[in-house]
Length: 514
Ligand code: XMP
Image (tube, rainbow, N blue to C red; front, side):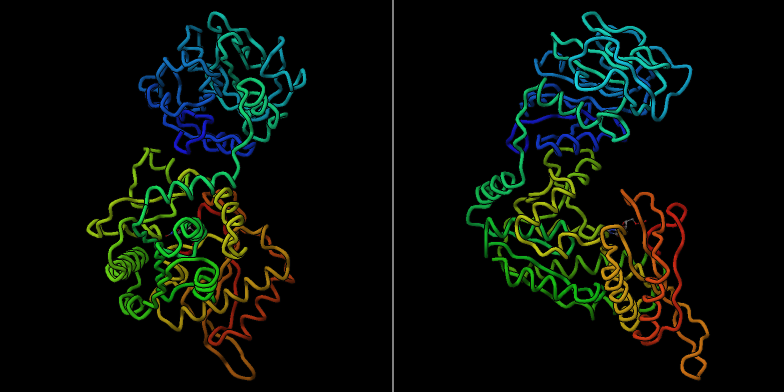
């Protein structure tokens, strides 16, 4: 496998839970990689997996153009677990029969074990399982036996122990399934006999060796944004290469309070590397002057970033490799092509120009999920505030200042945001609210300060609860905490006389305001 360790391959048929399956496998310390279902059996063989898992899919196996995989995978001699669509595809491919379900079975469903089952031996006779399907298996292929059923689904699980083929119609990877925590481990440890030995310590050691081998005596350039991914990548490469790593940090003047200082302290002090921190704020504010259209603002910051980075890259002299903090969800989302090395547009706002001309790209985190990246960061000794940093958009405060961006406005957002961060920390809510920040809508309202009429800016507070940042609910910050935040902002931040709280969900609103 790409990590040079043997583990599990999840073949992705397009199901929403595919990433979750991979995470569940890794949570029990088994390495796991996701490949598109179109991967050839030769490609799968090259990775030398110990087991295969076939994911779900919203498609119908018998529909035209339905996702399919190479049937030769059943002859690899390793255990295969089909989940939902994966089970239907297995049944169909091996000669069983499918039928369109009359009713869509969705949500928690009672499933009964029908016979002795190897896969389900750790679950009770009857269990609540998470279902999400319309089609169902009507007849199992020769050699299989039905091992569970539900009211709506006569074949809720099947297996052919002699060939090592197992399948479930329900989703053992979601926590709504009773004994969810036992089914995958049963498959991995007892059936596939995989040892749970994939640890972050091993990962770090292996990566350090691999980076040293790849880079040799050359030098590596990394764009450090202060975000979790690039910070952890920097720490890891620094461990491997020391001063042969050159990190470029561009301060566009739209960072949060003390962020630049944090980066300089963390990397300039404790890690062995060459750190180039550039204050490019004049250039950024200059280019943003007079611009109000949100997309245009983002594009300007993206282009200015590329310009500033390219300039530093030139000054850095002979550099053979570019390093990036690409992580596994980026890879899966872009189709998972191995070695695709599409330059992850730094800050997601614009790519680096191709003519910077590197011999190769180094992406040491491209096989890790975010929580694993954080663990690696902690193990490498990065400070907690960097490892547990909230997502921060590449264009920075640009998207939190509606309308024209100016230095004084950036100052208001920065100061009010720092107060919000401090009060949320003081209230002990940091791990409950996934993202919280202040926004300057750019409008003023009338107020009274002292005995005088004031006409000053409104600051808005945004705080959301979310598991995936695709949908979100506004967090119910207790009123007394809100009161303290508001009081401090109007008293301590010059130019603000009113604070409002954004109580919108996503959708229809987005998390950021621009
Ligand atoms: P929205 O505003 O689309 O944000 O609901 C979803 C998540 O994405 C973050 N975000 C960005 N992250 N570059 C990034 O790396 C960007 O340009 C960007 N814009 C939004 C946002 O903070 C939230 O976590």
